[in-house]
Length: 437
Image (cartoon, rainbow, N blue to C red; front, side):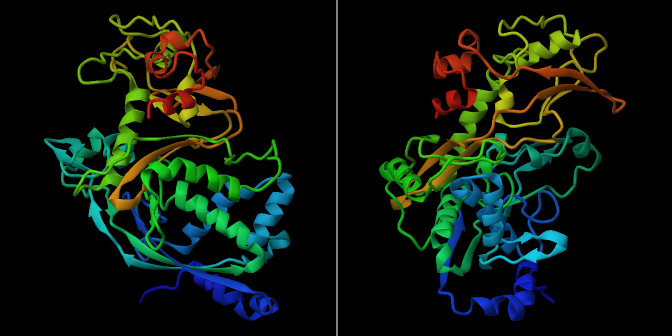
């Protein structure tokens, strides 16, 4: 028998006691229809898998709206912001008392989509499946390891869902209209559903609203930010991403190929640009252990290990600028299994934290006449905390290499080819990447 969702159980459970005091309030009720223009990645209780009962859950959308409300309306003191957020979306109060949400959400899944398996196993090795819509550089969490492929060549491959559609029914007191409308717009424009939304999975399109012309997208985003952003200062201690009227973003070329899924093509274009920038020059057989970036040679110096053919010569020194794309990062070396050669695997992570989400959002935006553009946006975030480099030994022991430097100065740019090509004066790695879009 189909189970009632946790969201609806909570709503039903508080109706007699909590809904009655609001009987005289003017309640706004809306129904919005959506489709996913990129595949749904995960989103269920089990990692990398959709929920088996309801692939899009009310709690997931509530979480998305809470996040984007903070990003666009969460100004003022941190305490005041949390108190307002709790009154709007609900919170666990003092002594275990629950503060109910004033926003009621119900989701009806109209189309569960079709599975797409990005990887397959061929001759004991994983490889991208021909025909998948998922770009390789975005799909590495779905790829089985070589060991897994060899041990079980007939294993069930991880999959995403393509073509999902759903209807959202949302209601809230009229007094909160400005807050909810702002959160909905930010979610619809920059967010999505499921996992890895900042890399474009689960991007949503509202299908019961007019779509913009591709040429209008940039000005529309700026005007809506001006309209919806709350007035006030952001708390310097608020450790969450937020938007501003001057937020940095770039748009790809317009995609309007006939008989093509232009939203997917825009997404694939963005991910390829990210690959080319971050992995330079790992193309075909050119790599051979050499990178345009400073991190591999920095690790060689700090560990005292390097293969004979790869002396650490990068002139930028022991700097780790790609930490700004999100953490952790794991560095694997070609000859790490050969005694006295390349370093063992190393991990770059924020000290005292497990991970730090990327401030970079990549996703397509559907436009009129079946067109699309790709959006690359940098969320405003606090400065990086101390970043630690650790060596990952085969025994499981972790050896710290200490706190490392992640910022660049102007003298470094000439020696990092992808940044020099983007802009010879831009020292911010993320802003430099935007110039390649």
